[in-house]
Image (tube, rainbow, N blue to C red; front, side, top):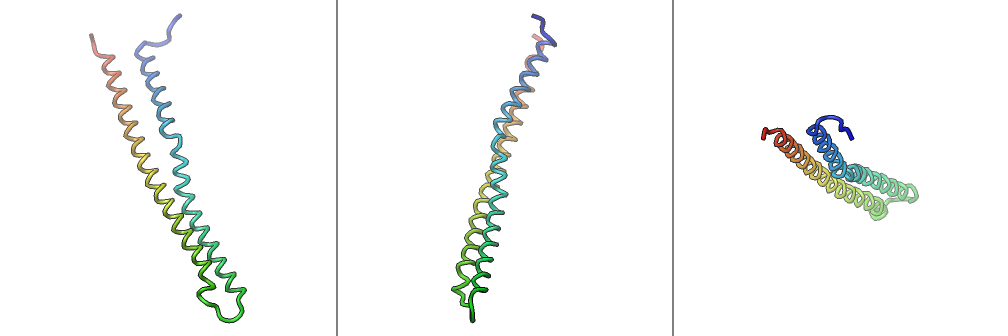
Length: 125
C-alpha cells in the first residue's frame, strides 16, 4: 500500500485533526451559556414590562383614588423578574468568559505541545 506524502506530513495532519476534534469538544456547549447569558437579561426585561402592564391595568380598572397597594403587585413582579434575570445573566456571562479563557489557554498549550512534538521529530538523530 502506497502512502501519500512524507511520514512527518502525515503526523502533522493527524495532530491537526485531533486538535480540531478536541477543540470542538471544548467549545460545544459554550454557545448555550452565551445564549443563557443574553436571554436571561431579556427575560428579566420582559418580566419588568409585564409587571408594569399589570400595574397600569390595575390603575385603569380602579375608580377613584389609586392606592400604593394596588400598584404593589405589578411593581413587585417587575422588580423580581428584573433581579432574577440580571442575576442569572451575570452569572452566565461570567461563567462564559471564564470558560472561553480556559479553552483559549488549553488551545495555546495544545499548539505549543504540537510544535514541540513536530520539532522533536525533525531533529537529526
